[in-house]
Image (cartoon, rainbow, N blue to C red; front, side, top):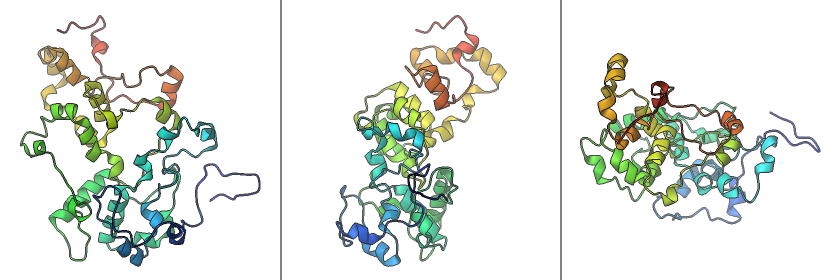
Length: 316
């Protein structure tokens, strides 16, 4: 913990004594709210309030966009907080209630805990502090197990418990969707990311440097136009995608066979684009070397076409 003294601000800045009480929220908001802005969520404010859950437990990003958890409140970053950067720093992605917060609390409740009883559960902490929140892969595993074997007294983890509208694309019902979803991802990537963004599934928001946030061009999913390079970027940045895409494809066989026989697999530009999902480092165009070093961009693999083909490639 830090001490606040006259003329001195802590670094980083964060709330450390007590979370904001519900009475502060009640000055403007009614605790009897029955609807949500989207109309999709089934709110149970009364039940949460009766259980002693604080408003800020779910609505922790309403004022500051979870800037603390994202690691954006250090002294060295203060000059970046300008009106020009405001849209990038505080977006609705971070100000609206995070589904991962609901999931984390419900999973803990189903294990017999009442995490909201600990005041620190509702406080914002810098990323260097360890959290007892579930990791994203653990979340998937626990939800699957509870759906397969529901116990009496547990909160259902089915989507329909909290959502009035759950639309699963028809394409997901195809038997080969797991290995043949590339074309769908290319044309409907904004729909994919809307569900498969890991930031929606876990309580803790991943910390990001101010440099990476403001200088590394992020795809705009609000106005997505089919683009294979955006698909490749998201395949490396989204854990849902990367969990499978990091596994060496069966088609690659042993490395000695693949190195001498993969030419037929890259006969067209489309074939090459498929390879570049992993074998491409071009994700930070127009960023100088100093910023690249600070971003600490790690390639998905250290093997690229130019590693062997020093004189270039001839692809129709």
